[in-house]
Length: 231
Image 1 (spheres, rainbow, N blue to C red):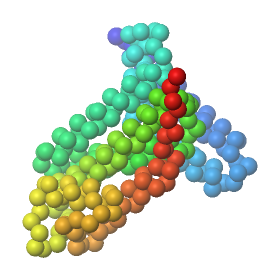
Image 2: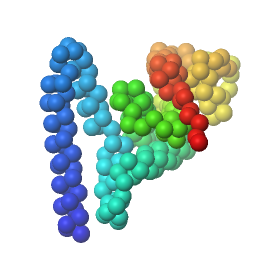
Image 3: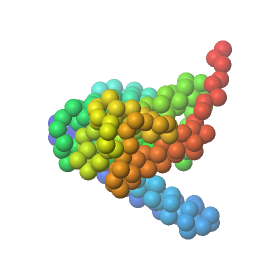
């Protein structure tokens, strides 16, 4: 057991060393393109380090190799991503059904931001490592799940997380179904019976529209798969 803990700590230490080395390499490699690009690249990589799913993949691969030394890293990471997606959906469903909690609110906001960043990093910023038909189809599924998760996160914020700070229009009863429809409609810039009337609510609505615009316009243009016909 002590050997396993020591190996895990050693793996995490190696990961930090690799990140530090990467930052130095980023400057040496990208400095000729200007300092704004260098700072942007470093900022993106720092967000990657803060992204829980990246650490989850490292841990999952480590556990898989303890159980089977012949584990293929790429396959293990794909399984880790799928497992993480399931876990974050379960967490979101749980906090939606529970009373308001500031810790849960912080977790949802973190997952909301990282949901957008993860898709941006792996499908726009980073060069794809594969281009087969299965990978292209998986990429499209990932986009769909990311958009649905974004809708559910904002549904949580409207209905539970920040409900006490939002003032809805008078004359229309507020229910869970109508708030869910509002979040979905707001994602695709469609009309809804509900509307927010205070400043914070408008800022929250605008942030959802901005994130949705990034997904549906900028990233979607890069992500629509050109499926290759299998032989």
